[in-house]
Image 1: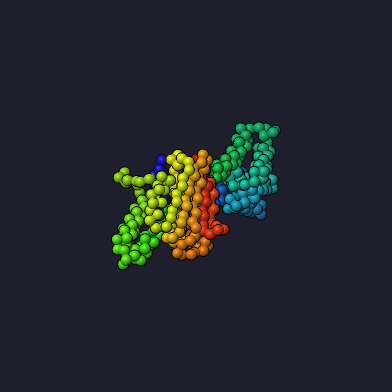
Image 2: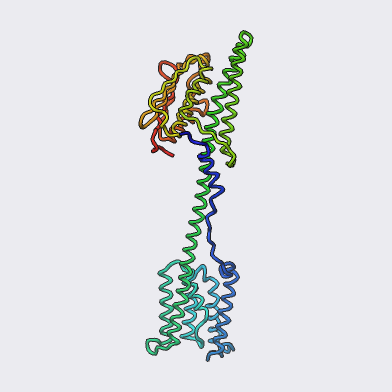
Length: 419
């Protein structure tokens, strides 16, 4: 069966661009602490310092606030240093916690005051921002040991002491869980962005491949028809005075070739336009169209022999299209580089596992052109080789020892080739 043009990469790319939705990238809600850290951290430090002073005002250490002695000033400075160490709680979490814990120990053991509120904030920050799990665990265990000893839980366990230990652990554990959740969401976001980039890159690769395919198809269509038109127009100009009827027939052939070239170009370029229900699509050529191609070439070249072997009707559409285009491009090269007096032999052999295509000319034409012009002067042979490679086949093109040029291709006729 013949393969219609809409089943091509161009329509797949167009469908991917129009139908595929964007990959959702979930972005977690960011509160003020995450949105404005340089503003909220000083506010937290000030709040911890103020709460510490309020806590002291309700304890027996309320005289410290009067700053009547050097020890009162030292306690005030310890509270200030411990609270404002929270300014670095994000970048240096365990160091900030160590400063807060150290200030608490100094106040507890040597100064007339007890504790600072900054220790609660530093515990949360220790779990939330410390990347090293071992350091974070050591710091929280040291804090819990201090609280246990300070509340004298081993000697006189009280509900208040147990609540203090549980609260300290809960603050650190809450921060740790939020850190793990943030890391998980960050990895999900990075993966979604990576998949989005890969999808765009795949679309660009598909577009580039389709552009190459369209350029190859355009070259095959235009080069073949224009070569026929050029040779026939030259022949008509030569014989127009002596044989006007033959010149008229040649110009009619030029007109027919031009119309066919335009029709094939419209057919090919139609894949670039959006497909509507009213669009009528014609199939791609296959090996069944080779006799018509040979018949047209016989109007230009002196001798064209066509030989087939095997059953050509059961060949897959992509292999049949590639074989047709290889024959078409080879005959175009003969017309362009050898001339109208060349003799060409075309053979297509269908076997159970592959199709063999051979196009051979004698190189004896009015234009004696070197084979390097055929191989290096354009993209024809490169395009034929690309067609064979895409199917997993093989193509060889080169000059013959006895003169002339040969194109030989082996194309797999089974569905195991490269898609």
